[in-house]
Image (cartoon, rainbow, N blue to C red):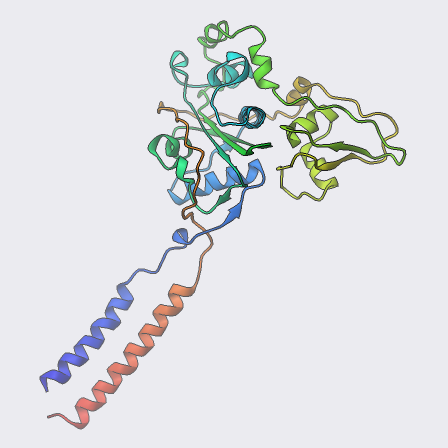
Length: 337
């Protein structure tokens, strides 16, 4: 009799445990995504923030510019670095471009940057190994940074990625100390860093009106679009690239159709002014900046879409437990001894 009650209690306990056992949350499920555009890289970072209960960082055109020029620069020299051409610092570059950087500017202000170099395109299914230390996680997960930008470029030695984050002043205005920081910028260094790109030779229209460009070492969609006076989205549409901004050396791109005269270049400065929207800043607090990761990257898990598999498993366990419990009950009634 005692054995029957023990068995019955065991199966009831299993049923209760199945009810109490938490199902695997959707945020723990892996997601695999090949990062082919800066927007995808930004989305991956903001998804990581959402998984940690943080609000998304707002995209800022100046940070998009600093990140893209850094990716282009790394592609041209064949290695990852935080250094800018001409001896300018990241802080000086932000201030020179007009970003209202918060924090003690003499210490660099509240800004951080993650960079990496890979032999193949980044497949994001979690935080890359080189970015998993505290400093690099702070670049992506700090509660105090307000804005983000990203850049991707391809060179002869691989693919280069940059993520720039920063905090804007609460007023949205440049700090008074910014002028002192900018006076120490070497002559011409700001323009060299901000407009850095491998020179792009403008091609004239073919007899059929098409303007085509063969990608050279170190060039990117960003630099090609600027020089031809068009946009990255237009080039992507003409060449069926989707949102992919990674191009390769020797690739033949259609820049314009039905051109009646040679394509005229648009100055980098003018293009940036016209394409720069106004972004409202938010208050910020000081946190340390990030250091450089190694060039070796391996994937780990990142949140993804919700799955119903755990719920189905739970229902199955409950059905089995109920059937077993009912059988034991009938057994007890028919054979009370």
